[in-house]
Length: 243
Image (cartoon, helix red, strand yellow):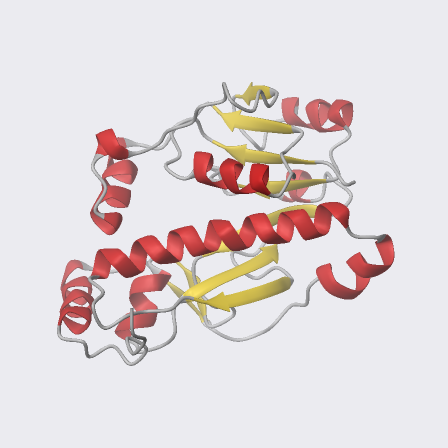
């Protein structure tokens, strides 16, 4: 079995969900490596605005159940993490909410690299607010699992999966479903990669780089209002499933 570690922060809103999913698949990480830079209040507030959660409802990190080894570094890019990876014999890393733009040294430190879940269908939608921009342009929302490289959201793609949208959905329903679908897909791929043979890894999990698409900046308030209204009025093209 290949060993992996999660890169995250202690106050990431979905870290517990990912660990719960991994536990169900009997694929717990060998370690969780926290960066000391937690998510800011604005970032947590943005998550709450997108999902409808209140801060008191967020299931922040709890480790008493699983007793996974926990380590903390000042920065996921700093040299102190390299010895940690070597000592633990980590085969690959998983971005589970790092606050850093990861550099080449850490990306290429392990045998297989760093696995990432991007909340959009690559290569079309790179960058920020990709769920919102996908809806704005009447394109399918979903998630992409890929290996990271030095270019943002451009690494080898392993798998994409669209997210169902229903006529009864509000904006927050779709946003929350994309979040959870992404971490569920990430857990699924982690399990498969952890237990696969070298032959199957080469065939199924090295991924392929796909050109094209655009890089998007954070969505502005006016465009976000258009997105919300489109969903409210059931005008989003993919808002056609029956719940």
